Image 1 (cartoon, rainbow, N blue to C red):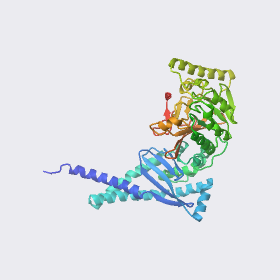
Image 2 (image 1 turned 60 degrees about the vertical axis):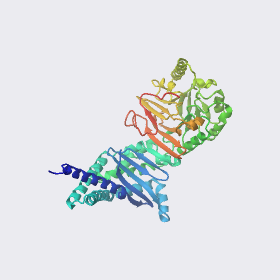
Image 3 (image 1 turned 30 degrees about the vertical axis):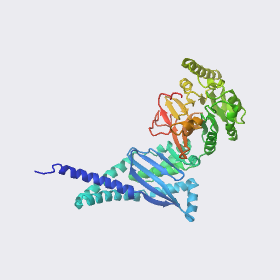
Image 4 (image 1 turned 120 degrees about the horizontal axis):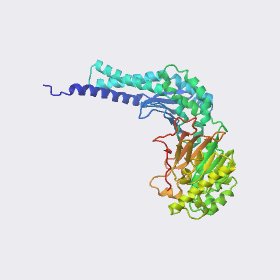
Length: 494
């Protein structure tokens, strides 16, 4: 009787597992391949992952990524070296022009076939030699094991090519230096303008497998300069709570993204004193309109302070036209007093309803459809959803995007990292803001959610398409999103 009745099953399974592990180890160790193009050296890799994504890593400046395909394969193009001397000059010329980036893109496309051939050889070798060495198998067994691993990877590559969608870069995630973000992430309409040209370039690549590396298109798209004035840009901020660093944060973003105006949904201060607001005087040095919707921590003194800023405009329940954008909003009911909240929930509900009704009535009286409606409290915002298409609010210190039918609600979070209270939070509160893109007709095209973590000194930017004609789905939900997405509810205020 056989002492090991399961040996006939265990051995083949063990050989298969060994081959797969060996192939993966080889793919990680020697799969990434370096190519020098226009004085720049890139490492290109394709490794199994939980999700199908493409990442363009321009370290130390940052990275741009998108979910581009359905197969569990991560495609990565990483800048690892900038040449010196003549190569340095060539590199500078390459990255400062669209033609230069197109040359880089075409250079990477030309490397697709040798790259794929190398990956197949690496996978076969990893599976073959791991089985041969560990199991001391016959050459035929080791050869079949390597061949099986190669076939599996070929299926993965084929599925990646079939499902690859370069338009996923319309909603990229950026991590890195804030000053570089506008150059790496173009305006939404600029992507659409260049998509036809991009598809024409892609058609030059022959075969399904070659389409795998169309991730390189991201270099051409994401590096294109922003066309000034193509869309109106509004910097959305909120809840700075007397944090001087919040003002610097706002100044940096306003400058980097060249926004047309700043829209603040309230709580500029904590205590509402004019002396406390002096930290925000630097907002007047940003030579664009600063539109302010007072929050529950603000007071009449703060309202007067903003009104006296050279570029300050306070929303007082009427439709204003600033930078060609029609805005309707009113101060939080508590901004008229030194109190910040009411204990009586029924009285508070009545105040929120009254604020919402007043804004709805004002829009009807003026017979003007505002492009943006602003309130501070999310309860008031919720009561406006049946009457307005784009609502901005704050108060919760949590960044959020809500798309409910044809109504969009945006909360930029806290641009002052929750102020002093943020220092005592269990987790570090990031500085946050949004850049809203509006068409000439006042329609919300897209929004960039921005977060800055001071302890790690990193910026994170993620784009969401908002206009129904552009976005793929009515509501975008992403568990890994930097912004919190909700379908039918608004976070309760703190």
